[in-house]
Amino acid sequence: MVDGGMGPNPVWQAEALSEVMALAAGMRVLDMGCGTALSSIFLAKEFGVEVWATDLWVKPDENLRRVEEAGVAGRVHPISAEAHALPFAEGFFDALVSIGAYHYFGTDDLYLGYYSRFVKRGGQIGIVQPGLTEECDPPPHLTPYWKWDFCAWHSAAWWRRHWEKTGLVDVEVADQLPEGWRDWLQWNEACDYDAGTPGQEEARMLHTDAGRVLGLARVVARRKEA
Image 1 (cartoon, one colour):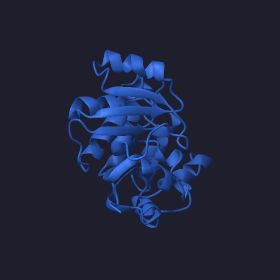
Image 2: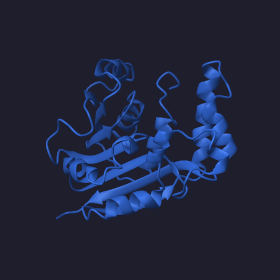
Image 3: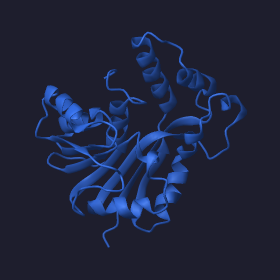
Image 4: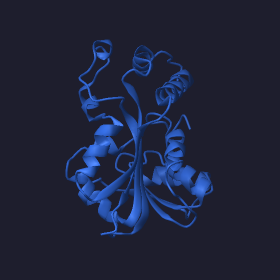
């Protein structure tokens, strides 16, 4: 788990998302921006779904090795693809998920119109990722840590409006994970400790904030039937 870490714990986030999504054995699921496919492996093992583990940064052969070691070869399919050039048929998936990655491509006003085509009508779309408790400029206590690309972090309420304004989906859940910042911090500290470099900048940022601004946002919507 630590070796495949690329941010807040992907399995913990996938578990939180699965609590508010209707996943069932045999469903076809797109795991968009899957990183090292840990969330894809979890979903396949836990729910018996078939997962297309899609990422741009991590090579498919690396993820295939992890999939085979986990014993889910044939149920998790590693794919290399850019988020705006997905190699799938429209309506192919029963559900779309994105764990800790959707903000890298999904803040575009037009993206949901493209992305939602790949799920069946009535199918669910779910994301969980770093976010804000409410929309704000960088507060003074976070100024020393703030990086330019944090501008893609948004509140659950922002994501609700961002999706609802398209008229393409019905948002069913838009919330902040309870104590999500603590999960984020705990995993961050575990990875830093394992690497022999405790007390790194991101952990200091989360300690300083203590849940005032930062956390994990979770959003689930359903593609409209017509």
